[in-house]
Every structure is written in structure tokens, then in C-alpha cells.
Image (cartoon, rainbow, N blue to C red; front, side, top):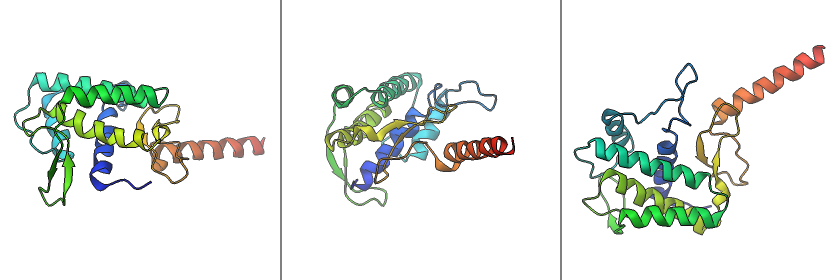
Length: 191
């Protein structure tokens, strides 16, 4: 599946946004943690993802981003493409998309779907919503997944060729479960 660079970046952003929610993020003690609990965390998220046009952020922006995050989480939980498309359509429409070609900050030409003066929530809803729309249009909604590790609910987009990825990370969740299965087989064999 050929995915343009800007769409791939938007997919990574939406996955990381969904994974900041309390049901996905955990403290070291295993209790839920909201990784976007305050304005400093929202600024850090915007900076990390190089979201252009972000200016002063306040509690209203934080609440709006939390709402957009919950709506994106619903896309990952959608039972089929029709439900996912309806959710994405709602997100993108509410953001007031205004597609524009842009080549800023060392990036080659790409499309921004948000208006130049858009809030951070509308920016995320428009750009990330259109990235998810690309997946839906390609008939690939089954690529929008949640990690199958019992103690992890992270969202991810399975971009493997054969759509076989089961874990958010093969280095953490996948490896941990494979090691546990290996140890269980060894214990059983030792009897």
C-alpha cells in the first residue's frame, strides 16, 4: 500500500493522539494516565508532531483536543467501514476543511486540510481525519487496530504487507508475549 509521506505522518500523529488517552496510557503502577492532562503536555505534543500554525493554547483547546481524541478512538473501534466513514466525515466536516498546497519547514509540497487560522483541534481533526479517510477509501479499515497484548490497548495502523501485525510494537508487547509463551513452553516441557 503506497501512502504519501504527509499521510503517513498524519497517521502516526492520530495514533499517538489516541494513545495519550487514559484507556491507552498507563502509569508505572498500571493505573490509567492521561498523557494530555494539561496545557504543557498539549504544547509538547504539538511541538513533537511539528504541528504548524499552533499559537497560544488554553483549557478550551485542551478540551477540544480531548473531544477529537475520543472521536478518533471511536474510529479505531468502528465495527466496519461504514461506521468509520461516518465518524471521519463528522470529524472532518466539523473542522471546516480547507485543502491547501503547502511547502513549509523543509517539507516538499503536501496538502494541509485545515484552514490557516484553525485551532489545534481542528488542525488535528482535518489532517488526521483525511489520513484516516485515505485508509477507508483504499478499503483498508482492517488496518486500524488495537494491540492484542492483554495488558495493552494502544492503537496502531498496520502497514505490513500482509496485514498480519498484532501488536503496537514488536519490540515491547510482541517480544514480551513471545518470551512469556517460550517460558511457559519450557516450564511445561520441564514438567
